[in-house]
Image (tube, rainbow, N blue to C red; front, top):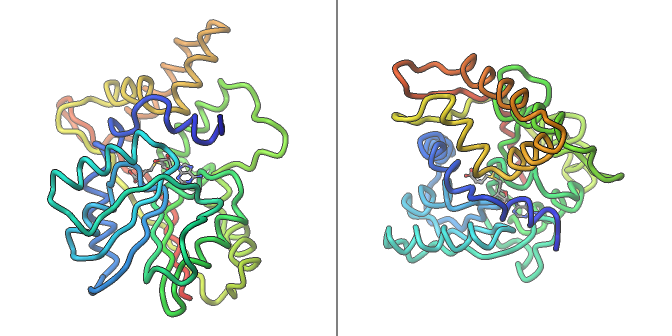
Length: 271
Ligand SMILES: C[S@@+](CC[C@H](N)C(=O)[O-])C[C@H]1O[C@@H](n2cnc3c(N)ncnc32)[C@H](O)[C@@H]1O
């Protein structure tokens, strides 16, 4: 089994995505879209951004490597009556079956950054986007204390065995030099790429930060793996303590609810 696919089919990311809906909608609103528009949402999960894109009138294809999330997305689209939104399985490293110059916009919010071959991902995003179109990526930023998920992943990976040789950290998509190099190899000059720090919120009206961490522990592949590894060497309590401390320190809400800001790098490539 492809380990990239296995990681994201593990658990149930829809439980985490439920915390991301408001910011997903805000990202889509901020794109200033005018229809008609064909959009690819790459690494779309169950539709945090694909659904609001379709609600704005775009024709949307959501591609994700995890079958369970594609199924969940198609269910949500049907329930919302969105007939111009279709979720399908695919790998951001190789968008076979998708023609060149197919989309006005390729959006990937914390999605394509997790694919294992970043140069292939950049090339494929450029290939399927029309000249004159845009690629917009949201990427977590490594070693940024205000980038909640990047900190959560950093803690999680410090409890997990080292990755196989040749593994490229997804966090490198939050570093300017890597972004410029990857799109450069795909034929995009530096001046066509802009990067700006932005903020995403993980919001729950009825879950405390401790309960949020419980959701990550039960449903989010990378954190599930960390807890499995920690169990083997008696470090579960330490891992749990560090994650709860992080979530509590970053929470802006009170009274048993959560609103945790997370800085991310918003990358826009104009083709
Ligand atoms: C953190 S989730 C974000 C999901 C969604 N964009 C959202 O904002 O709710 C990462 C998503 O990327 C998907 N993904 C990871 N590697 C992928 C790949 N190689 N190709 C396509 N999707 C991938 C995962 O299955 C998962 O749905």
